[in-house]
Each structure stands twice: as C-alpha cells, then as structure tokens.
Image (cartoon, rainbow, N blue to C red):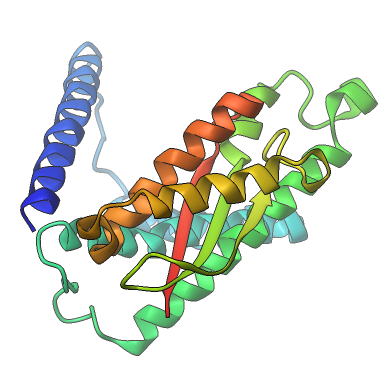
Length: 246
C-alpha cells in the first residue's frame, strides 16, 4: 500500500507539473489575442453542432469504413477514460470503483466493447496507411506530405496477454502478443520469441509485493518489455498488459 501511494502521489505531481505548464502557455496565448465580440451568440446552435459533428461524428461517418473506424476510436477514448480514472483510483484504494456507476454492468460492457473497437479501428488505419503509402502512389496518396513516421509510432501498439499463477508469478501459458503497426516486431525475425523470454524474466524477478499488486505488476512488465523493444527495433510502442491470474 505504501509503495502504491508513493507511485500515485509521484505520478500526480508529474502530471500536474506538465499540465500546469501547458495550461499556463495556453492562458498566455489566449491573453495575447484581441477581444472577440459575439463570443456567446447562438449558443444553442453551436451546442447542437458540437453534439452532432464532434460527439456524433456525423461528417466523418460519411466516409463509411475509415469514418466508422475513427468514430469507434474517438468514442473509445471517451469511454476508456473511465478505466484511467479507475486505474488512478486503484493507486490509492485497491478496490476503487467510480461512485454510483462503478459497478454498473453496462459500464463494464462498454469498456470491454470499446477496447476491442479501438483495436479494430487502429487495425483499419494501419491497412489504410499501407494501401495509401505515399512512397507507392506519391501525390495520389491522401497521406502525401504528412508526417508518416510519428503516425506509425502513434498507431504502434502491443497488447500483451499473460496467464500467471497469482501467488508465485509462474506463467501458466506463454505470453501472447497482439500487435498493430509495430515496426520490426515480426514472428519471423525472432523478436516475439525474445520478447516472451523478457516477460518471463520480468515475472521471475518480480518481488512478492509486486506480484501481489496487479497495477505494479503490469507496470513492471510494461517497462521491461518497452525497454527491450525500443533497444531491438527503435520503435516506442504503446504497451497494454492484460494479466489473467489463475
């Protein structure tokens, strides 16, 4: 509990420092502008536009497949924000749940559904970028002139699924990797097999306190795996560990 509290307070301090700096920069940027007349005119119309165009994704949904993928990703970020709140709360209270809605079955269903939907959306974006790669069709590509390198880093994601003994940390099955757009992480080049060994070693070297705390265990595995992948491939993917204790 003590270590978890220290991590929670440390993460909060770092986040507040980064967010505070950005907020101060935005405040100064806004103050540098001239007053705008009619700022609050047509509030209801603007609100309707915000709900239909942004929340409803109406314009993007006209593009069928890429529009639906974007909508799932956007809505997923909104819904999965609840999991961030839950994870943050668990740093301080082990069985934390969001008040009122935290134990609603529909909330759990939506979180699981959009976790899968976001992965499907990212897979769709990956296929679109491969088919529309500027190096293949040059100016005919919708991505011509865009920063493709950072885009691949954003799309790069590894979902790691681990089945372990909850008391000893012993693996009950080899780790499984679900990857989307991670440069150099291919089964044929042996990287995934080496990554399995890294995860196994991370679990074997975890302290009893870490094994007893799923949040700490996920972070421990994530850091070790990300360090390995960055060293071997140069990629800096987002890694989402999923641990099933049996």
